[in-house]
Amino acid sequence: TEPFTATLIAGDGIGPEISEAVQKIFNAAGIPVSWEPVQVSALTGGVNTEVINSVEKNKIALKGPLATPIGTGHTSLNLALRKAFKLYANVRPSVSIPGYKTLYDNVDLTVIRENTEGEYSGIEHTVNPGLAESIKVITADASTRVAQYAFQYAHQHKRSTVSAIHKASIMKMTDGLFIDSCRKVAARWPHINYVEKSLDAAMLQLVQNPAQLDVMVLPNLYGDIVSDLCAGLIGGLGLTPSANIGRDAAIFEAVHGTAPDIAGQNKANPTALLLSGVMMLRHLGFYTKADLIHEATMATIREGKSITGDLGGKAGTSEYTDAIISRLQQEMAKRQ
Ligand code: IPM
Ligand code: MN
Image (cartoon, rainbow, N blue to C red; front, top):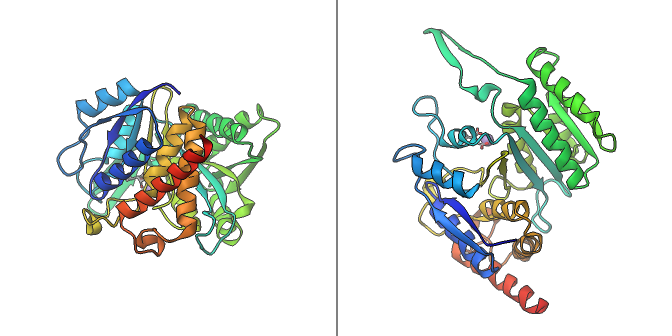
């Protein structure tokens, strides 16, 4: 809980507004952070030496959304950052927000996604105009590393079960190697239940009764897809945080897009980036401050008076931000 410097990648579209909201809230909560803003934009170029040097130095970054072109164009900057810093585990909790009504109650799921390989290896080619191929890469090393992270996470967060999600009935060698690696790691954590579940069956269970799952560990592409589904169960990507964890660095990011249609209009919901910031605080050991910001955010949403349009309210980004700050301040005054 020493003062620290964090790289701030505000991002494209609504990125600057939601980053500003997080900075204001952190400031009000008395977080001893100095932000080091760096320019990365999908619109003006790629990952540059400035951002690489900054994350390398600070080892911690908070990141807003970056635009990603579909089909053609440069590789995603999100992926470039994950690759550059070997951020092997992508952690995405989806937890119901009390008072914010969705079709499901009491959802409490964590997706732990392998973050460096699988279909995301980018090994693709066109054989001829009517035939394209992609190579899915699975290694025992990366599978073991992410499985270890999943069990350690389950242990630290007092979770009962880790499920390895796979399609090894079809992808016999790749997903086969993935679950084989998970199984070996599971043997070292006897107090945590270990389950292997086929991806399709797991999806049926998630939409019928999400309580049947707990912590999930998945290969990269499945984790990408399943984490969006889980976010949908609790109200969408505007509410779910994420962490990209590596041995030497960690990047905390909002998973949602850049929402160019509402950019610059004081309409964006900063919750996902804010809760990613809360994950960053926990990662650094600021547990009390993290809880404080988390509680103030939940209370503001629960009360429903100053929430943004996507949550069914009428407030702007700044009004929502201020509402969270005044709750924070009330709570801090009580504690003094
Ligand atoms: C995510 C996003 C990224 C991914 C895109 C933007 C490259 O969807 O973080 O889940 O596919 O991993
Ligand atoms: Mn995704």
